[in-house]
Structures are given as C-alpha cells and as structure tokens.
Image 1 (cartoon, rainbow, N blue to C red):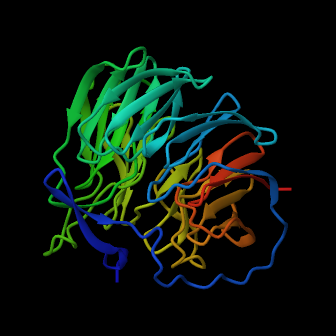
Image 2 (image 1 turned 90 degrees about the vertical axis):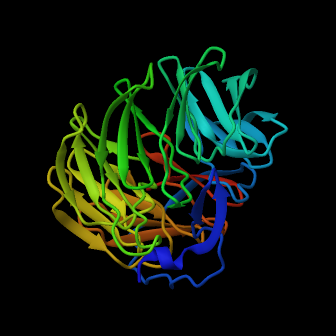
Amino acid sequence: MTRVFLLLISLAALSGCSTVGNLFGMNSSVSRLPQINEAFNPLVLWEEDAGSMGDAVLVPAVDHGAIFVASQDGEISRLESLKGRRLWKVDTLHKISAGVGVGDGLVIVGADNGEVMAFDESGKPKWKFQIAGELLSPPQAEDGIVVVRTGDGRIFGLDGSDGRQKWVYQYTVPALSIRNYAGVRISQGTVFAGFAGGKLVALDLKTGALGWEAAVAQPHGTTELERIADVASLPVIDELQVCAVAFQGRLSCFDIAKGDLIWSRDISSDTGMIVDRRNIFMSDEQGAVLSLDSTAGASVWKQTALEGRRITAPYVQDNYVVVGDIQGYVHFMRRSDGELVARIKTDGSAIRSQPIHLDSDVFLVQTGKGKLYALAVP
C-alpha cells in the first residue's frame, strides 16, 4: 500500500481544489526504533525555545552566521550561532504560517491571512504585502527580488526594497493534490519550483517569464488518489542539472539551462532530497533512505530500518547522512554505506523539516514544540 492511502484523508478547500494533508502530528502507529551499534554520541551544543510551530511547518534560516527562527503565534527571533543566545525578538501580531526566509539583508515570513512581512536583520519592519492566498513555505530573496509562493499554484516576485509586486506566475493545480509546504529554489537568476501534477518550471527571477517546463512524472491510475503525482518537495541543484521527485511518480534530472531530460527512475517521495558532487540522498515515501549516483541515478545503497517513522529529507554532515523523525529522534547513517551508527532524542515532538546547515561542523533541527537544537558529530 502506498503512503497516499495512509495520509490523513481530510480534504480542505483550496481555491476550488482539494488537498490531502500530510502525516505530521497524527497519532497513528509509528514503527519501532531499530537496534543499532552506536559508534558515537551526537553532541548537543545548545538548545533554545523558538516557540511552537502548531500545525505549520516552519524552518530556521541562517545568514552570515545569524540564525532566525519563528513561531506560529507570531514571534520572530534572532539567535547568535555559538550559544544560541537570543539577540532580539519581534512580535508580528499575526499567526505565522510560512518562514523563515532570508536574503538581501531581509528576514521574511508569511501570515495565515496572506500577509508577507519583511524585516531588516535588526528586527525593524521594512514593508508588508497582502496576498489573497495561503502561504505555507518560506519566502526567498535574491538580487533585489523576494519570491513568495501560495498554496494555490501562484508564485509572486516582489520588489525587495518596498514589497511592490513585480510579477506573478500562475500554475493550475489538479483537482486533488498533496498539501505542499515546499517553496522555491533560486539559482543563477532562475526560480525553480515543482508543482502538483508532476511539473517542474524554471522562471526568470527578474520578470517571472517561463524559461522552460518539464514533466518530472506523469499521473497514472483510475482514481484521483492514484493519479496524484505531485512534486511536493524542493528541487535540488548541482552545477549542470536540477532534479525533482514526485510522490507516486519519478525522480528526474534536467539540464539546468534548457530543461532537457538527462535521466530519471521510478522512485516516490513527498519529503525530498539533497545532492552533492557525487550522490543524491533522498527519503522515499515509505521512509527508506537512498543514496544514488547523481550522474545517472544508479543505486549506491538503501537503508530501510527507518520505514514507518515518517522521516525528513536527508541532510549531509561530513561522513554522515542525517534525518529527523516524527518522534523527535535524529538519526545518523554512514555516508558510504548507509549503516545506522548513532541517534539522539530531542523533545519528543515531530521534526517536520530537513535539518539546516549552520557551519562546517554544526547543523540545526527545529521540533514541532519549538525547540531549536544545534547538533554536531564529536
């Protein structure tokens, strides 16, 4: 049985379409922790209370060593990296549903009423922009443009200096889709975004013009549930290619400039992946972690011991591949062969988003209850 039939089948109206909610926060059964021979004890360098996420998926952001976090009840904080000490806190007076995004000296979040709010790095308000739509993913800023995505398939380009709308791209989503917390990826003046229905698009950052559109996967099956083939996670980019994976679909890699297909293979994921110069590491729909050769997609290894624990997309830290799970555990696998070699428990609440890089030795994990942990390999 594929994961879609294990998803919460509560359908919410979203601009005339329906979405299938994800699993985080549900009390359904979770597979047992696998027994492992622990090679080391991960280090907790510090922890800080960032405030509860509630039902949102909020992500910490790092910019030049400064850490920015948000809570669903409306607070944004800046922390210093060495000890997690809070430098300032701002109450936006809104329920935050999207964030945190950073870039061009801005700290940006989205509210559940569709308001985009930008602050400078000292916490001073810069501008606001109202969007008629649901904001679920962190805004991104680069080269004077703030890019904001809504749950109904629109992507906005806003002027970074005052928030004025410069362009909007509209994609028509299918009748039924997965509730999508993935935003956009910006690289080399191009905005890359995956969509419901298995599409990946490349937009010009300055104008929003469509550069190319490619099919990551094609919907198939007889029912609407079976035909879900959504790109529900961020694409990943290396020097020559951009790759995206669709739930109940495929993993496909395309020429970054032209959108021509380079390779693809049948793998399903709604959480995502990370790429380095040699490998793609990804979590599939069952909770297995895979290492693939990035040039052609050949399998390197597969770790299945975490299936049923609703893990995040992987993060790579030195010689280890790291994922979080729904019970707040952080798992470490050897990068070379995928063997589980260590784990650490946080506060027991779900880790919903991919661990975030802080520096060469440290990464961040934020839990559903709002604890932020700085972790390292000894």
